[in-house]
Amino acid sequence: MNAFQIWKRKFTPFGSIFDLAQKSTELEKLRKQSEQPGFWDDPDSAQKVMKQTSNLENQIKEWQSIITEIEGLGPLLELDDGSLTQEISDQVDSLEELLEKKEVRLLLSGQYDRGDAILAIHAGAGGTDSQDWAAMLERMYLRWAEDSGYKTEIFDRTVGEEAGIKSVTISVQGDLAYGYLKCEKGVHRLVRLSPFDAAHRRHTSFALVEVLPEIEGNDEIVIRPEDIEIEVYKSSGAGGQNVQKNMTAVRIIHLATGLVVTCQNERSQTQNKESALKVLRSRLFAMQQQAQAEQISDLKGEFKKVEWGSQIRSYVLHPYQMVKDHRTEYETGNTQSVLDGNLDGFIQACLRMKQFS
Image (cartoon, rainbow, N blue to C red; front, side, top):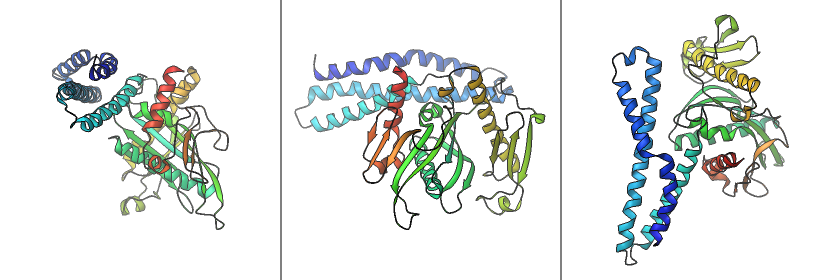
């Protein structure tokens, strides 16, 4: 058995788990369903089918591309006289990295893994430094989402008094958004020389990252008009004169639970109300799951006090450079890369740990 055959065998389990033939059959059924008379009579249901169709089409194309590349390596290896060795090696490394990511995707089989996510960041203990840290995390996740091909929408953002933000709520939209981001929930700790300390002393800051599945059309989560109190007020954020002059911001209070959700980033009161209800629905769903089952860690994570000793990950910028996940022990010294949104290594390590735990 030559080197190519040995390497190709490493790919076989991934290909068989994905089952290209089965996925193609599923895609054909969805396409036929979309061609039926009256398909668009129920727009919400039709949109879900079209979204499933698009996701399957993308998955099949990706796997077909990988298979084509792998099959093309065989002839190259047979013809190689030494001049193509580096090119082939680079291609193999690239494919192995891609296969590792595909392997992680196959681990995401939870009920809500394929759906959109709602990500919220809350500044914790540490004052202005923690509010600045929350803004750094916001930038990190927005960069990760952009690099991963996800669409993002900021529902609500409260700025700090001196710098940074007190909190932000972001909708991350795309296939497997919740599946990946669920590993990020918890307390994130930063150690650095404070830019807000005149003596430039070392400070420790904390921020809580909350991740919820975006719940749509769930019959179990019914929000009746009498269950909530809606307040409107002038937005304090950016958005032009219309946002500043008119009562476009919305605050919804769920009377039974005391949950409060705000949204002020849209240009109209109606849009802000819809976004706020979407967040409230997800929060109520998480509370329901917590009450009904012992699987809260799969949906929202146990509540953790935002201070020393409860963090899931530490970002140390001084006296040395290191980002370390305390659950998986995965770490890297390239702190700037992580803060620029390179989170795949941490997410993959977390998902693999969950698979075997």
